[in-house]
Image (cartoon, rainbow, N blue to C red; front, side, top):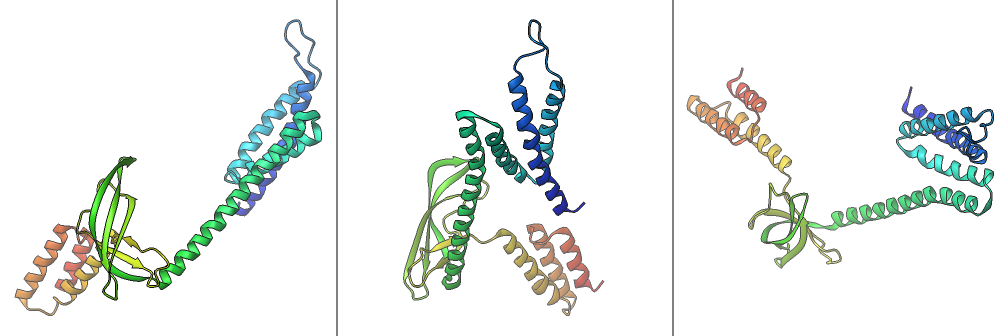
Amino acid sequence: MGKAWRYVIGLVLSAVAPILFVPTLYSLVHTGNCGDVGEQACPAGTGTHIAMIMLASVIVVVGGILTTGAGLFLTVIVGGIEVLVYGHGTVAYIVGPSLIGFPVLLVLVGLIGARGNAKRAAELEQFVARAVRVPGVVASITDTGVTINEDPRVVLGVEYTREDGAPGRIQRKQLVSRLNVPRVGDPVTVSYDPSGVEEAVFEFPDAAASAAEAVATARTSDVTDAVPEPASGLIASLERLSALHREGALTDDEFAGAKRLLLGA
């Protein structure tokens, strides 16, 4: 069964569940207490009503699973309509609209949030398009005393030089990994708006990208260029590869492949 069909079936189940649940619940409420010692006998069909409520509860769960939770919104809305249809009095007129309005409000909030995120993404894209990227350096780091999930929040000061030679400085609070706390002198990449409309931002070099660049450099500089060298150059290249492997710049598989390429195997 395709994902789309599972979603459609889940929505149908989510809509059917309150249609079964609400009228049956009202019937049991009108029946009142029954069946115990000293009370009136329960009318025929009471057991069926109880089973129907249990079945409706299971259908709600199944519908929610098939729709990844989205069906629950439909269940609540249909349930609110059912309360207005079968209910009477002030309680029904309060509960019904509340059940209908709550998921609608959540959807509206989600749409507004998505629109805001799209606007911020567009502004960021425009900033990146006109920004100038230059190297910078961590000039100061101050502990704020705040820790979130054992990671410290610090105030980082970054200094950089604009393309026109003017110095620049950025300071901002940032959560950093306690296993990789920046140090004064660490390099960063600064993006600034030449017009000065947007505040400059900085980012640390991506560790994965740096590792990939190191591997690519090792492959091109240490392997390809070493192939035509004589025996002495070959030994030097092998020693250089071994050093890169020990330092972690090359994985075991990459080191083995580089040696095969170097030796012509």
